[in-house]
Amino acid sequence: MCINDFFLLFCSGLFAGDSANAKVIASGTTGDCSWTLTENGVLCISGNDAMEDYDDYGSTPWYDYIKDIRTAVIMQGVTNIGKSAFHDCKGLTSIVIPDSVTSIGDYAFFWCSGLTSIIIPDSVTSIGNNAFYDCNSLTSIIIPDSVTSIGDKAFSDCSDLTSIIIPDSVTSIGNYAFSDCSGLTSINIPDSVTSIGDFAFFWCRGLTSIIIPDSV
Image (cartoon, rainbow, N blue to C red; front, side, top):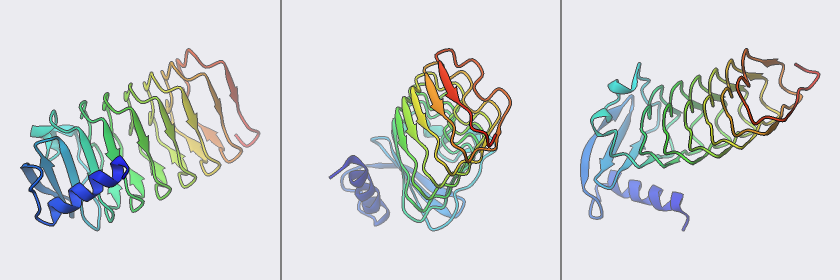
């Protein structure tokens, strides 16, 4: 059993009322979804609709427990990752995202400095502004073929990011999208891209080569 399957079963048990293996320390709602946090730092989010968007990380319902969150599990049926949902969750090391999610909101993982890797499912079509800003432990990420736009500062200041694959589905790369990604050495931009925002690769000090297609 892979680690993602383990956490999915774990959270399914919690929402079914089985908390024998973990003590629930907090719970509530986010938009039309429900959430539960256990004493071992697992935040489970369940529902068949959208999470709420938050103006800043201080307004998230789990803000008082932000230092305790280690793993976030979004269950099948949740349709988005809300704005600022995990903003400043510095202890977050892993997240499970189902293929029901279609968008990752602005600032969703802003300042998640403990996050080392993430799998974005093929259902996601947009990555919001500042979505992974300053995730400076993130070493690699695969953007699925479903994504059409990469928002402003989406991966800005991800200093440990060494490689990234931009799929043929992407048509626009936002302002400062990869600025200050000092570990990035090369990048291929597909023919589908028609616009690259201002300062998109600003201060990428390790970048030695880049191929910009005629479509831009």
